[in-house]
Length: 505
Image (cartoon, rainbow, N blue to C red; front, top):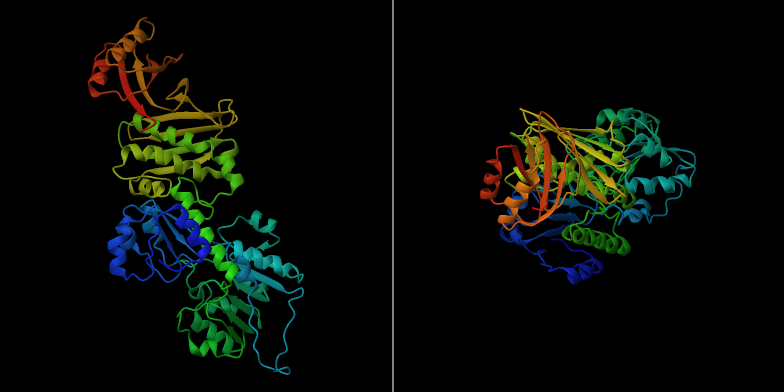
């Protein structure tokens, strides 16, 4: 929808059909976007809820840049659309930008050293980290505030984590690198400026609306703040003239990322992520789902199909709408419980929900249905080194099913409602509760019925446990099981319960 560098456009054109919508008005975009599987925008195009709702085939939105305030994230997430941005493509340019006045005013141009001053970084994402790296060259003390980054990670980056108020009180220079949303809008207003050191400097190369510009103007004209460097403004492209004309303000027209190299890298990162999502993978820089590094994905990836399979199995065992669910993990994925739980919900909800479900919108759909989901580390992994247990309560019963990874990539169902099994989660599985487990011939009877229906049996397991007078048999078959066959099996005198689990549906 907006111009991107040729390096990205060429890559995209080699792999996908590309439609140039840069000249379209809103009406044409609404009428045509229903055919799009991916959309790439910069800052000129706004994708609101109406447009996203009209995009019936849409799977990914890429923002070629950092800020995503021109995308309705709630609407995209509800529709299961992955939103990505490109936080590293323009990182170096944004961290290195400077303004030269071009005016020979030596007497009045007395500056201040950065050497051993305190730099406060609000938002220590990719750009904030690059600013910190450069600040260390001046031996600056770096403090940071970011509610989305664990304190331990901030310390690893060489910064001291602080609450916002304390950061403002201690910093000689405050640099803003936060994302704009309803919670962060005007995060720096009159009380925050009053808390800053007399003579402190403010740098904002993130989003103009993070700052209450009227309050900033007052703090600068009063002399409480020593100066501000602003590349972004609330009223772009017409910023407040009273603010930008101040001698204590250095102003540029939102060009901190405007280098040829940065634009090329942003375009390529946006395109690569669109192609990753459309190929069924996870993007590198997602906005509305957890971001995983390649190393993290290697650790958690094998758990995700297992978690989805456990969700499918739980859906087959429900007696009514699910009310509560819990996901407990033991092993390498313990650090990524949210991701594992999301994929469990995909398996559970794709069976019972009457709408498309994926890992983006599964938590939203669960919340809309009143399904309460908890997650944590497993306290009883049954001796397995990599283990996932799920519990679902539906108002009548609570059912536990568990799975394990053997040799890191071989997923197995190892427990179904108290019965120990070793079941590969694939194909279609017939679960039969036999209330006369001590009588011979039951396996043969089931085999005969399936054989007469020309249903190929791939494997049979009979549990050793007897619970509430019943045993459990799991029969894996290669074809769907018709209603007639199910009814014939249910009519057997010894069958207490029958459920069909379609893992590959």
